[in-house]
Length: 112
View 1 (cartoon, rainbow, N blue to C red):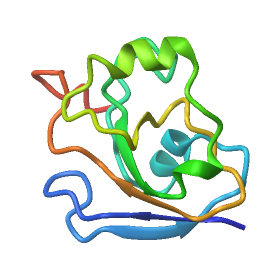
View 2: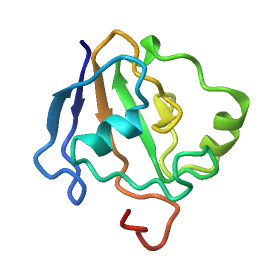
View 3: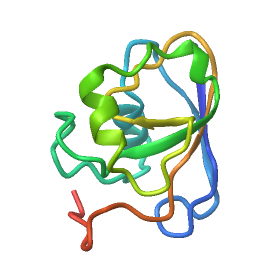
View 4: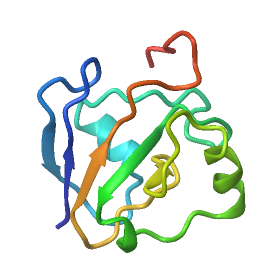
């Protein structure tokens, strides 16, 4: 069973967190199920960038982003080569180290 480790984020996850997750689950769903309240303004339909994360370890275990995800990632704040939309990144068999960016393009949190 793979593990997701989330680096500390000043508002969403101040102390960081680590948890086990089943393969086949999106990173976004895994975070939400483990009380890491990442934004997901489009309700996980790959129509925004509010669930943008950096996959600092384990990126190669994820399927590559498709063209639609890549187009949205181009709009994400703080884009880097490890960027993914967490609603589209499906956990495989490797552990992941996730960093949640400090900002999103949303001016106001949706507080889902």
